[in-house]
Every structure is written in C-alpha cells, then in structure tokens.
Image (cartoon, rainbow, N blue to C red; front, side, top):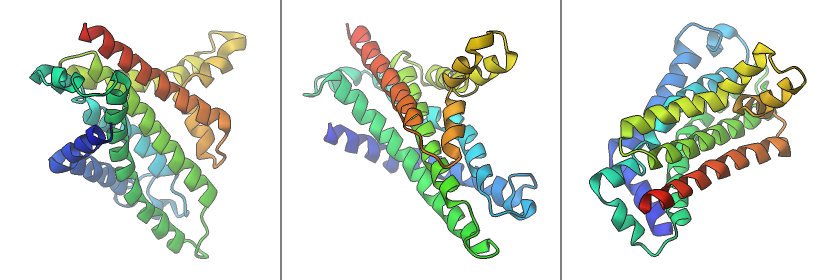
Length: 243
C-alpha cells in the first residue's frame, strides 16, 4: 500500500497537477484576503481576522478537490490499467486507502503555506499577536477535514464513472449538497421538530462549529464517519464493477 501511495504522490508532483492545485488555492485565497476589496480583505476590514480564508477556502476546495480526484479510478479504467492495479498484492480497500491518502496529502500541502497568512496577521495586529489563535487553528483543522471529506466523495465519484469529467461534475454536486444542501433544507423549515436534526446532517453545521475554535468530538466523529462511508462505497463500487 505504501508503494502505491508513493506512486500516487509522485504522479501528482511529477506533473503540473500537484503544483497547480497549490498555486490556484493560494492565488485565489491570497487575492481575496489581500487584494480584492471585500469584507474578506484583511487590510480593508481593519481587524486581525482570517475568517475570510476559511470561507473562501471551503468554496475553492469544493471545485479544486474534485479536479484532483476525478482521474483517480476513471483514468485507470479508461486506459485499461485498472486490471494491473488489481493484480497487486493489495486488497480493494488498501488500493482505495492509498489513493485517498495521496489526494488528502495534496490537500494538506495546499494548506500548509497559508500559515504564512497567520504569521503575517499575527505581526500586523495591534498589539502584535492580537489574533484569535484558537479560532484560527480550529478553522484550519476544520478546513483540512472539509477537504478530506470532499476527497472521499471525489474518490467515490471517480470509481463509478469511466469519464473524468463526469466524475468531476458528480463530485462537485454531491459535495455541494453535503456542504450546503442540508443547511438549505433546514432554512425552509418544512420538517418542524426534526429541522435541527436535518441541519446536523450537513457538513456546514459541523464545519462552523469547529471554526469557532472548539474541536468537539461529535464533529470529529461526523467528519470521520462521512469519510469512512464514502471510502466504503468506493470499495463496494470497485468490487461490483470488477466483476
């Protein structure tokens, strides 16, 4: 499994894919935080606050992560190398896990440089260090977990289609629904006493909770459960299509 993981990482970093993901993420978040006039612009807003990074970053990941994962299995099947993959002395789940971890590592690589934003705002604060560090680190963990969930959805989407574009669109739609769909249904107030339960099914509710700086075990269980669910569905999809 480790060999397959390293192969996937090398594949990302030996092509433009890995670098483009990191550059695009940093470019978009950087423009909104420092250049484009908006409430997210730290210099315009006048407060040592990085909330804009995590709002913008979540929507960038909504499209960027599916772009990374769309070829995970779709390309393997399209090129006919999927059979070679299954001849490795690995279980289906180990194959899924290796590809998933490689994509999540790329998500982490794109987040690490944003620590420069934290250091900059930390220094710009009056007095220096006047920033909600707990909120930042909670949001940082939350954004990573959000990216990890989107990755699991993207891997699953790639496993059920031979076409990378179809995989991309499916991953974006499912990720968007998981992130915002339940929140929208909750806002309609159609279900009365279970409205709050419906809201709790969505990623947004748990992402917002962690972003306040309090990492609740219930939120962690939610994120890991969603990741586990989509990885299991990926394994099931591969097992079915293999036959």
